[in-house]
Length: 525
Image 1 (cartoon, rainbow, N blue to C red):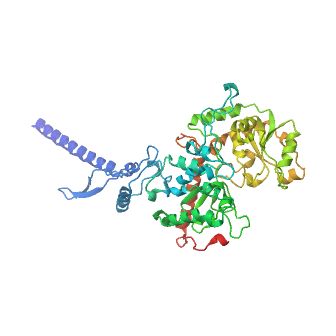
Image 2 (image 1 turned 180 degrees about the vertical axis):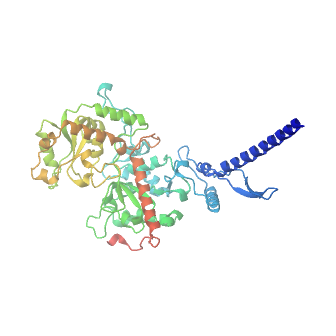
């Protein structure tokens, strides 16, 4: 009898264990599933609905996980279906789920939408390439998507100045075409303008005005700019921020796009003085003193297609032997009494430490400074490169010098320090030397003596900083993509997206702010 009682108790105990473990595992499963926030961070959401058991207790029933539809960028550009995007937004609003996070979309906050302008504003201009420059034929320079003819250096490998297959005869006014063609392969393009952080206007403003700078009246110069802003203002994308998220490239100095009414010179267009254009941002090779002008580097001759080509060139510049303390590539300005070029040329000619590359045309009617091999050969063998003002404050030679690992010497703060703030360091002493124009003009500064005072350690630090800047002032081949290296295009796009985000923040923090452009004709200002 006693044994039977023990057997019965053992069975009751085993049944109790089973029920207890079952209930324990069930509740642990519910707790784990209820900790859905961990799963939510990777894009899953769970919905829990209450139901009643036989004893009336409330528990949770788990539905199948719903996965938000996400768009990932692949290949050269991304086309995003606007209907899907709107549906996703409705789902997010209904379920109060935040939009996809930055770490889920590699292009989050980087999307750019490109307006499909009428061909008259870009492609048709290229057909008229013979008339785009008053003093020359632009047709050869517009080949290879704006890079110009590929340079084939005629020298043996031991004395080779350039890196094979990466150098082109690029014209300094080709930036609009180069930038547009790189943009066509930008990794974060979108066909849905509602996703775009910035909107690109591919108008070849510099090529357009270049053909009308001499011998044409204002009405002809302004015809295309007026037609452009009229077309833009009728697009749905314009009305979202009234153009404040729009940007365009000017392949000339900003001065060429800001002709004021009543100017005697009648130079350039009034594009950036048009009421609508005041809301847009313009990236030019040299800026003016306006808050929507942003300078980006002149195009150089070097256009890499792979990261290793950039690093290979940088290594070569580090190893270069530089027998010249300083050099100058340029021509005098006999008709410009305020120019210091004549004095710089004089000092260079009288110094054994200087190499002068005269940019006057020789007997064969050829300008040596138009030959990249000649220019780079001089700069590569120089520690310092003199970069005085030319027809404007800045010159392309500045970026050729940096490309050659040559420390630039500036004589006016507007030549670099008050420009190119996205691309060059704020600490200008880290990569350059400044000698005031007045000191040269008044013979208070002897270039050779000034530059000789720099220690070897200081020179090595500055040179290394210059070489580090090379990718940031270089535009890659338009049909290629770099890997981890950011070139001048990448830096410019980041800069413009950052500016648009600042504008959005200002608007959101000031609900009563007026973002409409004024109808007042500011050309009279």
